[in-house]
Amino acid sequence: MATDEDLFSLAIAVLCGIALFPFLHILNIIAGRLRRASLRKRLQTATRGKIVLTYDDGPSERLQPQLLAALAEAKARATFFVLVARADAQISRVRALIDAGHEVASHGFSHPDAFRAPAWLIWQDLQRGFSFFARHGLRCGSFRPPYGRVTCSMIVQCRAASKPIVLWTVDSGDSLSVMPCVEDLVAKVDAAGGGVVLLHSHDRDDSANGRQVEEYVLDATRALLALAERREFEVVTVADLRLRASW
Image (cartoon, rainbow, N blue to C red; front, side, top):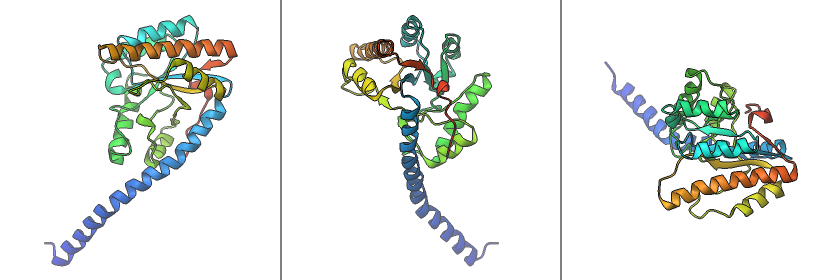
């Protein structure tokens, strides 16, 4: 039978846990933010003279075939960071990406925000993403965190799984309410001498705005491929960069 002293000790332990949890969560985020800068710098160094087209949140029924056609026309390969919650129900479309010569990597399972969700939930989401690839016998070479949110615990998990965390150096802006013009995007990549470009490959709603975003992604893809040909930039996948998982 627990004594009053035992109950008091338990209460103190619970209160300390409640007090420390927000503090530990903040430290987890701060450590990740510090590491994020070096991850991005590593990509900038590795992509000089190269363009890496990356597409998040797929696979998709409507946009993906159009992207594959545009990439095939230029004989270019890209990296697709699939959202496993979608990919699990569309494994044939994931295999279509691989059959076309593209790289498929993990964007996690359900797209949680690592700055808002507890570390254990993020850990579980990443693991569900990696398990999808293992279950279907697919290679997963890297991980892109949703929203680009990097935390210390995420770095540890990806290091243990030998999966480099891959961010981007240029955001296409296709997820913004007001998208930049394609010419500005191309000029930014050109001025940087290449880079990892963030685009999205999921189907939007069937409204005029949704179709406009999909058209922007296609136009941006074609324009960046034309830039690569004009400037003799090499179009490669993330795997071609041979990045290593690091602390």
